Length: 220
Image (cartoon, rainbow, N blue to C red; front, side, top):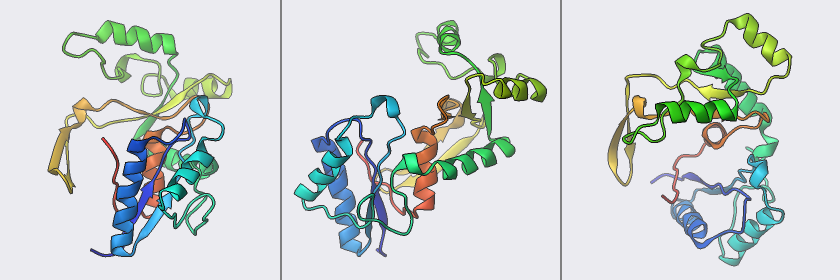
């Protein structure tokens, strides 16, 4: 196997637990076996759950376990910064491209409206229904002028991924083999929250691409 680039990407929402350390170990071992690179990336976009001192604990725990970091917030590297809160321009460019290409859209629904939608559509077989894009308040149901006016007025809004309908996606997992799923089972995930920060669904993919990550190893 040629040298790999792998990453351990914890969120500083608490102290590092044994499951996270195990995931870091697997990544580190593959990097060392192949003469590759072990990247530490701090995924700190969830400011509501941020815990002071958690990032320092993560670094200290890795050092205690002997898992040396090749690239990261303190180790440095050519593809930083290695904290997601410092990479906002990359996410903005990605979102602008998705919006321009029709692969994402802006949604103005309040939390109360989302909850009412779920209650309206929920069934025993489907207790957590997908976002009802055709009947909610978003840039797919509003005209461009109203969308621009609401944004200019400062109305809270998010950006959602416009998941294709009626398609199948197949990829190869090194453990499970070929995995196929229907896009009809995937919700229109929020990519950018109302506070302007990206969610995991956007930032994780943008960063893996930008940092040249070759393999994703994580706990499940």
